[in-house]
Length: 95
Image (tube, rainbow, N blue to C red; front, side, top):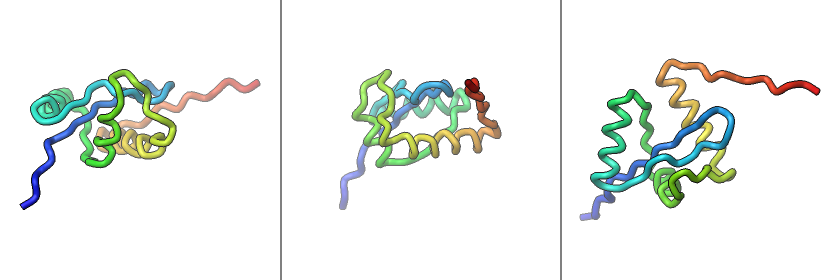
């Protein structure tokens, strides 16, 4: 019989300008509370055990590292898709 890993949850914030940051992280009861609050506020959830393990090693307020940009971009795209939203694309000023 294998031992079940505790539930782990990590919340990210993305403002559309800067790299996403870790805003909450926890295991067990703390993770369950993070998930409960996210559901209560209609925040899309995505289960990815390996990504949660990587992100849970980061400090609160820390920006995700460049090596995770692609996978986090996929998570953000998923969140937009399941929320029925379309991201706002800001054009950079031409010189």
